Image (cartoon, rainbow, N blue to C red; front, side, top):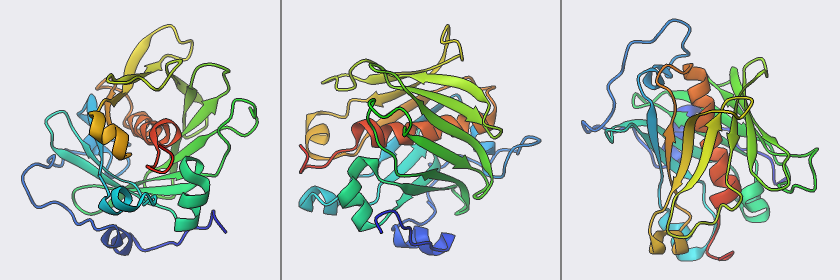
Length: 254
């Protein structure tokens, strides 16, 4: 029962999440779509950095009850690129916590759902290498374009970025300790042989109050501007998975 989803139409779901497309000028203009680029991912073709801000949920702060996560994705100019909203049920959030399965719906500034991230329920222990974390990235929704697969390692967080054919493309390697007080936590995006760093997912320090009393996190993403837009989208998906795995917490747990 805990893993069942209640499916909505796109408009109904984002309306229920309290989101409507922004009307202010601080949004990224719609660029031309490159050949072979899935609809909506043209926004990623021109950027080499993204900022991910998790919205603070007042109900969660006051009660400690885990609510559906919501995020705003911006470019380096502070212009909104995407809005992301989690879909999971109350039972899943309260019983399974950060391990919960979910769908993450990602909408552009025109109100269209351009990506869906799907995470199944898996364990999160290095003692169970046959049941590690994974995330499927779909764009448009229903069409897989890549995967984030956790790699077993006794000490370091490691992930493999795969393309739509499940072929390894890149690696992500995190630090030995992800609990660095008053500083950023960096996950390096690396070549397959881990000999060179080509990008980074950085969990940014948000200040004592925000870190202690909320689970609203901020991330910075860096990657080559000429990287395949599909792989950029998968790296964005990896950022959300990393947030749930290592930085999602509740006041009750604290």
